[in-house]
Image 1 (cartoon, rainbow, N blue to C red):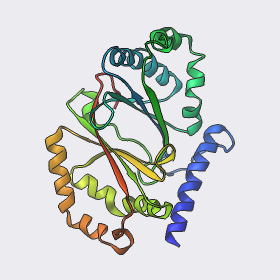
Image 2: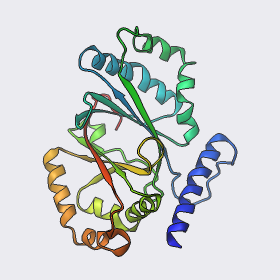
Image 3: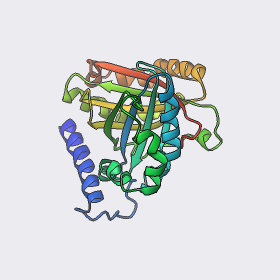
Length: 268
């Protein structure tokens, strides 16, 4: 019963948020209501070493990021893949108040004269010298219990930081629901207490490898990442939660683990 109620509430909240953004439901918040759940596009530009990397970096920093900000998509995270498959890859995290804004962003960019002028070398690159190998994209919705992304304090000061992006695939929809539920039953608090600094948590709505969830953490460096994950693994509350009968059976079938560094102009 609890699982069905949790899933129904989650889907209803996401759907209502989307419709409100599209104008089908008045987006009027009642007093003292929690923050609206954000939607995210996670976009990955698969590149080749050589001219593509600079062309993509110039495009994102000089054309795409300012144009997305003009549309109300902000703050935009821009990251380079340090550890993981298919390097080089540039990853963008695009947050928005509703899914419609993300779904129509590229159409609106095509009508932005300032963007088109700045993007010309990338957009109109010849087929013999393409600006990227492929672009992968997924649409995510924030967890109900973590509805808004958190920008690290070190971002404003351009301080040293790395990011860990983790994607959990589940073997069945029911297992996926239980893993999402697990975060809401105490895992958020354990993460924060043990120094796993969250940026966002989300469920995948559209993308590959469904059902899945994606979240991002930030650390000062790899030494802090390693030490704090060890602290998390040894935490008594985590051991208790993960050994509970509802969560003890395999509810995650595969984990993708990427280490990213922010571009100098990243807003996250």
